[in-house]
Image (tube, rainbow, N blue to C red; front, side, top):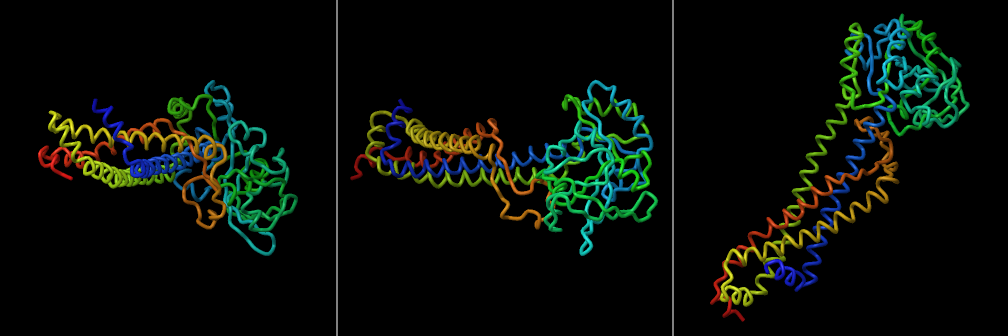
Length: 409
């Protein structure tokens, strides 16, 4: 009976109820969309870290990671081919790619810009990384004297594919080296670490230019089943005790830090939603109660107990929360599935490059991610918050004395 009465009373004042519904629906929709965009950036960043920077597992010489940001060439893997031969026999490993990372300066004769150089094996690199699929132009071949350049650097120098650029660096023995290389392709990965500050050359060319011989600074691995990450790492640590084994999870501290801030932002949004519900529903229930004073008195006179009157108004608040949460969740889900996930939001007007590297691997677009558990949580939280904020006005309504209520004009 209480549910039936609450349903009948819900739209007595349609405009007021509709405004409250709209406020709750808007709050729910924005909360879900906000969380969707941040979750999407997390997922996209993790994917780009694996697909372009680390693979699933990385192998270094002992001590390399201590000064990793300095790209030390004197702490390299001495016999990479022997290591690669063992890895190739592991049934859990899908691909293996050696790389050399080193500091460079790029010059067009009029200006210079610092960047990071990567020596990659054109034959092996695609078995671990997706760099080859993000090139405008041609990918590298063999040990040719050519480079791939990030599109941000291309814009900085005002270059185009086919132009030449000088790559300046220091060898393993700290002597200077200069290479005049043709730009064979443009890197467009939507990962700022590559697009804004990288030049990629063939591994053989890098080893010759840096006096590395056959040495490399890292060996990267892609697994057939990423779920076996720790199992494979433990096995490789036993096989190669003289090397250092790490996984992609060791390189996402910056993204994790932003994720922690995201959780605080989610708490803020839930608090905002609570405030919206508190103001909207409390106002709706209180006004509804004062408009129905005689009706409340009649119900009390007929034997309805205070807790039942209170339950009636709380149920009305919960119904408003249910409808508002349902509408907001449906609108948000439609926006995510039809636009935010497949198309994304273009932030190119903000020029993230000027903001610098802030952890997330994005250049100008954010994609949403539909998260059913989060949608469900937000939906139920909307109902619970609406019901909770109805308790006080429901209590006020339940305290009305039947005789006084019936005397009201």
